[in-house]
Length: 447
Image 1 (cartoon, rainbow, N blue to C red):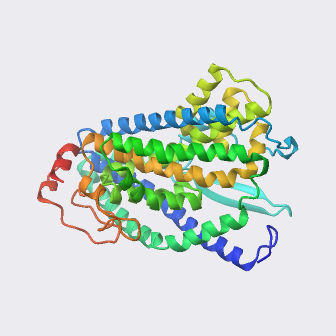
Image 2: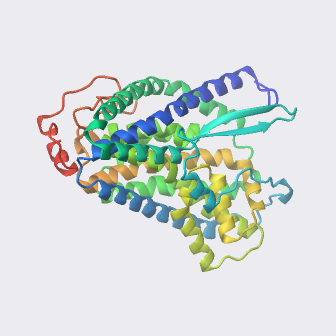
């Protein structure tokens, strides 16, 4: 239909508007969802005997899958050798706008304000200044954990606050359900605009690099994750059918945080993960669990940069890449992005940061696959840990999915307590055995 980057046609503008509006709506509801869900989950965990064990297993499995993913990335980098004879013009390198650092990670843990907001001001070519506000998800989690723990410690006098928090969370979930109903339109807009804006013409000389990335992502998503589900006695087919709504949205939106509400709904509704655990594991995973962005991508990219600039990597360098991928993904939580993670990896290994600019041309294409893999892992780990702890609702996990990709009734885990409300807004009476406070294990048995 004609048009270009400077003068897009009417269809491109329409698709971009629809897609960006949908992502904006999702991101708008993420901050209150994080705060309310984490506070409510801490409150519900006060009667759970193995809460610390759940958190510990979550972190361990985050690290295990990251270790597997980065090992695959290094292996593919050495086999495919994407940086050798790539034909990329070094003059096309652009300086990355953001850089990862361990100090920035430590500083990002400390909230700069109660709302976890950050403001940034930029100037366009005409010198016009514009200011945008963004939230720091990691800071919001820190704030919510502090409030939740304090409310539990206060005791009886905090009960009205906790009841208000739960009621507000149910309202937010209702609004979220309205937004999710727009997903088909949002998907059309996001995917259509991605095809128009990027297509596959920018791959060019970076074809081997792009191939290596997508082969690595495919191995993690279609081999590693199914093997992990099978190893824990779960159906791999049910995993794929259950996680598909989140993977689909992650692929087109290229945002783990924007997809987080759907990922959490997948974990609770399709996988039968208890709400009090999912509301902790999924938001935490959305900031730190990134097998695509923080493992596969930086491993292969670091090897590409080393090969491109003729730098020989030793065993110590590869161990550093593994270390950064397994431990360092949290260092990008304050400024989430694969580019930030890559600069952190390159600076740790001592490779030239100019190599990052060589890869920016295909970054949007790669980001779609990276994000899809990220959100699949963010839903998988809560399911695995729940299965290991015996708190997963296997009947719900194995139920057939509806046309929208979710089981019915929406957004209710049978291990929830009496205040459980499904996303569609209809509260259900809990089973008699669920009325009494119990450990997670006993609640699972009652379910």
